[in-house]
Length: 265
View 1: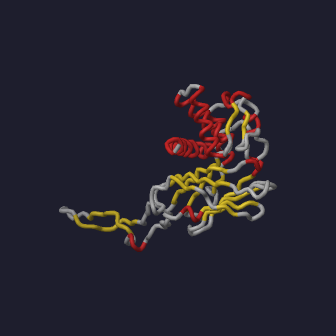
View 2: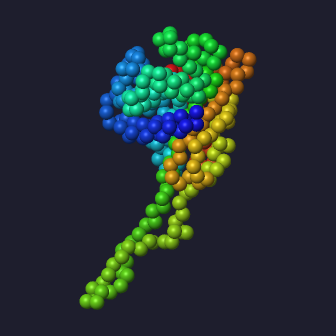
């Protein structure tokens, strides 16, 4: 399963970068129109539209050092990933279904009944109807440090004189590196600084944070973050909620990313 997740995380991070970059350029078919058709008919651009429509991010916020994008592995996102990979890697139907079920189970605790036109089934063996039946959500959380690598201001100064008496100029930093530090936060305990909060102020910490490569945030990090929902009596984390938020602390500014429950589809 770890091999599958690592492959999926690399694939979707590449897709998200492209999709977010091009989202405001082209005219996309609406998500509702796409979802009316079976995944086998979706184009790459429509798959990207579905994925990017579920992403929450702070890329448009000015004055931040840390950019964060969070992609939830909702059923439609999983279907879009699966569709793009099947086309790119020429999977047969059997491989497509196995990969789809594996990612659905990890992503939202659901699976497909392939003999009943691919209807979603929840963990209790019933056909899926509403988001409050979901027991978990997997996210791909991408972190980018905008201040790294450091760029110290430079100026043109005289560095010598040539044999013919002409002046030689060179670029030199205005200050030493020690006087112009980058903002490099520690992320070795990032699992303690990611939370989900719903409308009732119920708070969840992740069950698993996987994929961190460094103890400090310099190069981009792509983390797989799994939240499992507690069920009190028959009420789940999402029951009766219109929105929930992912909150990341431990940076110079707290990051809050909203997610609409009615977008879970």
